[in-house]
Image 1 (cartoon, rainbow, N blue to C red):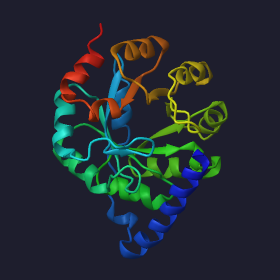
Image 2: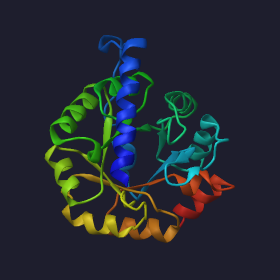
Image 3: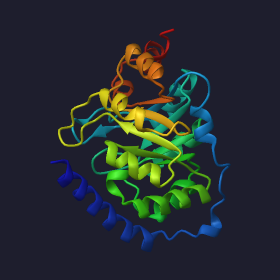
Length: 258
């Protein structure tokens, strides 16, 4: 069951954070916030934007591409027209790390999203310290008050927040917390099945002034074009790109549908 996985990873994350706070304390005064809004600006340009993801593994499929060199792949993504880059930094299930994000940040000019299980302001400071432009906040892992606190913290340190939802109840929580960018995950977190209709079903419930990012299951130019027609501002694509023999060609295939 997903709840068991979520509980397991959150419990692991809490233990990890206890150690990190002792081993590597962070001072807010030492962190220089970036200009807030760089990630949002990148995905609200005319036409649908691509957030290209760097992901070495997934809980449902195991290793995807453990040979990824983050800086090299980020360069390919940038040259191929991606608007932003997402980096998985969770270690146990996704084989990522914060250094992957740091390498990407130093190798390209695109805004970078940190994808992880963010549950503490310490992680926000970590994210800002390596120069990321945005952070993922998963509603399923946070209550509304905690979500709002982390949103405020992210803004204070120059980070946009992609707030991920999976159903109407989570969307309601995200909007009450005043999330500006809503990520709709098309993956059913009970079965891990993917259905793009999740995005289509939730879109009418999203306040019009918020940006929407469709996540998971985007595999073809048809998927991208129909999501754009439905009113989605960006797509986040990971597995399709990291498993492609030629990621640059795959991006062209996904995005050159007009």
